[in-house]
Amino acid sequence: MQLPESITICEVGPRDGLQNEKHILSAQRKIELINDVVNAGVKVVEIGSFVSPKAVPQLADTDEVAKGIARRPEVEYRALISNLKGMERAIFAGITKVKLTVSASESHNKSNWNRSTTEVIRGFYDAMELAAKSGLEVSGAISTAFGCPFEGNIPRKQILDLVQTFISMGVTEISLSDTTGMAYPSQVYEVGKRARELFPSVRFWLHLHNTRGLAMANMLAGMQAGIVRFDASFSGLGGCPYAPGASGNVATEDVIHMCDLININTGINLDKMIEIAQEVRQDVRHETESFILKAGKSLVLSTRDLDKLKREV
Amino acid sequence: MQLPESITICEVGPRDGLQNEKHILSAQRKIELINDVVNAGVKVVEIGSFVSPKAVPQLADTDEVAKGIARRPEVEYRALISNLKGMERAIFAGITKVKLTVSASESHNKSNWNRSTTEVIRGFYDAMELAAKSGLEVSGAISTAFGCPFEGNIPRKQILDLVQTFISMGVTEISLSDTTGMAYPSQVYEVGKRARELFPSVRFWLHLHNTRGLAMANMLAGMQAGIVRFDASFSGLGGCPYAPGASGNVATEDVIHMCDLININTGINLDKMIEIAQEVRQDVRHETESFILKAGKSLVLSTRDLDKLKREV
Image (tube, helix red, strand yellow):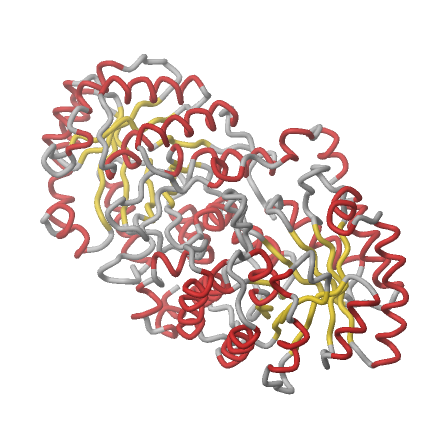
């Protein structure tokens, strides 16, 4: 079983986590949380999104958040945008990295942005031009890459074509998102492997939700396909509180917990992350999907001598 | 990614699932549920346990259940026992297959049976003798094989030694149980692979709990190590309702759901199993840990032409 020695986790809690919460956190609290996860060792944070405040009132203050956070040179603070207007707001807020997002599914683009896939992508070109002028780094995200709640299966070719489209625009860091938790391990492995073979210079991310209990299995499959970058959300936020079945993002603390057991380095302190996740659970005022918050970490991590175990196994 | 074409699932809901429930089901209801899962395609069922009714009042009527179920020749109806007395009750109830269980951890044996590991095993010999005389098939189970809530890490040698002990008693079907959800994928893979290399004639089972969110990832790792037999519990029962963090067994319907997506044959009808799991959730009168009961099955399974997808991928 080929697994990586280290992975990079992007903390998407401030964006994908908080964007569905009933109780809206203040900009000040978001700033604190972003600073806290960075202090715990997180090197990539998605701090919010520059989209319509009407559509996502929870993130309407991303401009203020962007201006308030402590900036560390070694940390990437990225924000999600969907068009030129978002890019302009990002530049104005001093953000140096953005993520352009499009759905692999025609129906999902219609439902999310009220535009066809082609129209969404066309909108990217102006944004890319402005980014180039302003020296912003741009990454891409393909949502519903592993299945669409309207269309069902997404043919692999459709995803790979979108990757090619991003590359032709100069984007070489691309997130494959299982937006509604429809991915399964053999699919993640095959898609991941093929994508890396075809586009070896692209840095691929996986964005996994645990809706059907497969986030960790999918992550393991992704790692075996050579993917080493994963989104995760503190406390497992990201489910829709209005739809009881919709589980959130895979929880950051759950991912670090698994990686610590396997000896995959994340660079993030598990205990600090658990503390943050506990606070977040209080912030949002409801139980969350995090396993480690409920069960506590494995005694093995509390007691074992890692080197000893390594020799023994 | 090497995955099996088919796996066998043992439905342990009637035993490990119900044994921790506050609300005790009637023998008649248990009989119905066992007949129902068999009708859905389950080929191995753990129908109960012949242990002290004081210790596990929920399963005090396993004798009655054993006598009441419809017996199909192609189905294995097994019961859990821990000593000679259990074996006698099993024989009297007409059970033809039992599972002798011992913990890999000294402290866990003490806490569960109030005996040392050696004492528990010594008790097996009389039971094995009686089983041989009576023509009962005996399988073995090693609980806390992947970690003990008292002792932490369980050295792999300790597990492999217990496998050897079982073999020397004539037991060649052995379940490795992650009793409190401490297993992690690389461990399951390494233990499973080594166990199969050392003991190629043994049929190994994996018994996984989702306490720390890793049951499916561990199952995937087990499959990659060549293990093709897995316990699962309808509706994901098996957590302790008194301890909120203690998640249950991996849910049978969640396992079938993943396998149907991957095209791993389980021989069990997913829709029928989901119906049973829904009824079980009503029977036990509380929300359960099943993902598919909450989220529903992936649209891909409802719409896709499996053969078409197979060709496409």
